[in-house]
Image (cartoon, rainbow, N blue to C red; front, side, top):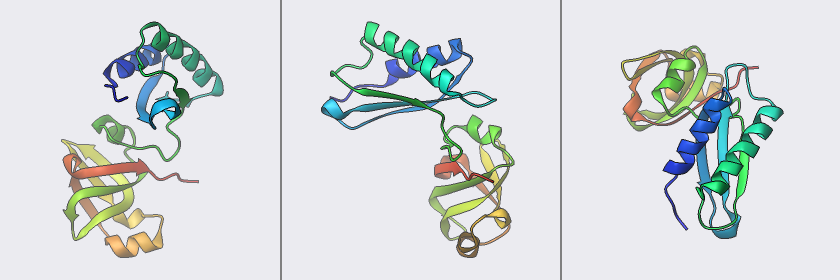
Length: 164
């Protein structure tokens, strides 16, 4: 059974804010009895197991009371977005300026669609990325070098590249 996630998102956001957390993302996967609702939460100092546990209890109770997830049984998973988190909102790119990112574009940029490099800046809907700082030699060879500017609207998907 398909349903709009608007109510789930609103409740998830409200519970996150009341706990000093940020709702990073949510997704519903699967169908029927094998549905899984994944909610990703974050905070500046990082998420603890206790944060996830507390959030899970509170949000699950509200979902049940408000019948926010119709269609019977589902599995609720709460976690951090992870070190390789997806970036999909302008504020995500602003927050992670200076970090290594990998992304793909809808349209070709300098003959390529897949890139990795350091996010130098994000302003006025434009990502500036230094390709010379790619961690993969193969990637650096295929994507070119230098600095590119890509419109946020051209970014199909993006994520952080963990640095150790």
